[in-house]
Length: 328
Picture 1 (cartoon, rainbow, N blue to C red):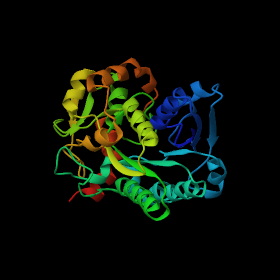
Picture 2: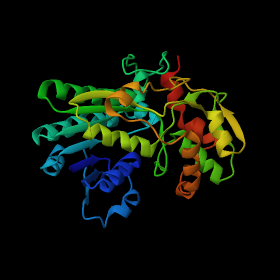
Picture 3: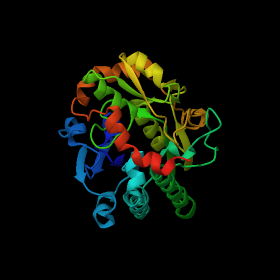
């Protein structure tokens, strides 16, 4: 197949590009390199089936020519992180909603055979049912979560109205090599790994008993692949590890001291995906255990040497908007 991966130089996107190439497909990776990095895809440059294009999904004229003769579109390009979405909601709307609209339009016009959307488990907000099924209500707590959910609703609507074959994958807490090391305060693995490299204590939010459905990135890439090749016209699926693990358990595996910082509003005590639907309909299930995944991270820890070091003082400053707008 001829595949187009938006966000193809990013964390998950680069792993998906790698898998598609291994399976013998032609891949065009499209990225504006705001969150992605050429370092993530440099090993593919000599592959005759690979092509990289620097382009921005917000620019529909720039996009359209690259969708000609494309079979599968994997839409991963997006702005992530909570605090910047609170401070700059327009940027998130422009990229995650309008950008998704542009990619959907280009896909429709080119009559692609499959459109796979990268949705987020943050759409569930403060879920009350565990494991959380796809039928749980959408209750996004901040602009990032909202814009990713709106993007999913666009994709669903393009299937209903224009018969575009769409699969949406709601990802839970993805981790692994090539995750972003620059930018704002964000995902726990990047924060902890930089702290480990510098010999600093891990900054644990609250008491550390909160749990997350940490899902290894190569398992997630396989879920995208199954979503593309499966003989279905439409579906919305959770992608999770089959379990959930506390932050304290993560620290046990990483080893080191810890320091506690205030619990944050709008953050769930637990994320835990019900994955029965994707197992039954797409024949997908995770292969990498949490312990194996953390060890793989530690084997690649040098990747995070240039990551920013976050400590209680600069975390407090970086998350001021979080408490200002979400508390109460």
